[in-house]
Length: 151
Image 1 (cartoon, one colour):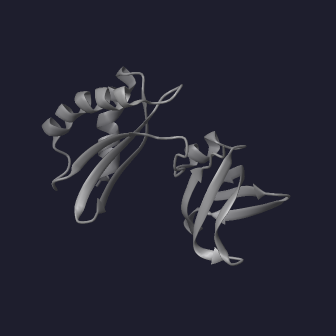
Image 2 (image 1 turned 30 degrees about the vertical axis):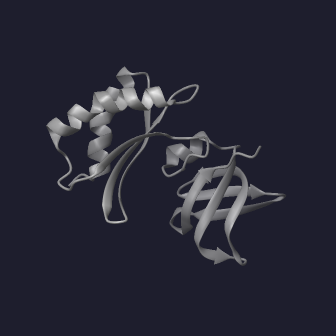
């Protein structure tokens, strides 16, 4: 059985491509007793509110027609953002050399937050250069990984 997010992404992909957008991520989560379906968009030069609205208006009728989710939910369309979450191998590979923040489930050397330059992603292992040292994290150790923008 395919996961809800995979089904949504498959339905959303042609709509996004037709609008010159790409699908960065799809989430179906429960927060505070309410389900949320979030589609995160990306495009060269960035996504703005008009892009989100245009995609939402085009995709909403498809969701209604296909009805892939049994529960009631709130549908949200968002930009992937500057500090986007990295989840899939392709996400990590696309941002090698960029500043990232990795948060682990369990503390390592007394901390769960690591900030450094993404050095590599290989076979599920994320390597981050922090100062002059490299830290390696198995994907299963990582609670979240995201780009980090410092001004």
